[in-house]
Length: 153
Image (cartoon, rainbow, N blue to C red; front, side, top):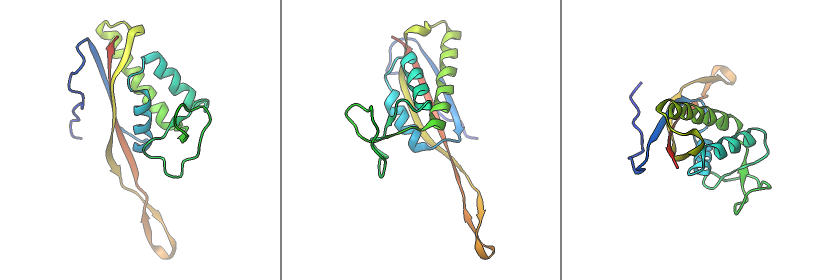
């Protein structure tokens, strides 16, 4: 697999800790919306938000990929949203990995803030499904790369 570089360009002046998830089997569209929502949050608030999404208590506002998405209660200033449970769980694991990296580097874990988080489309796992009369149709699985940079507040 090719080496993936960070999209982060060191705009933050303090100490940082990085983590990334490569080729996660989650929806790229869901991960874009989650990353937009938690960007700039404190780490504890972001982890709590993702756990609430996984329990279907707080929806993620879908601002870009919102065609035929229903309205959800509890979203401030935006009507459409969803509960992307699988993507929230995978992003939560990457955040916990970044927190462990920050702890290893000697950063204060209570003061960490998400300086940069982004998701990019990964490669597509090709597959096929059977159809009538001996034919086949593509049944592909998209993958997503997640990049997280945490910094001390």
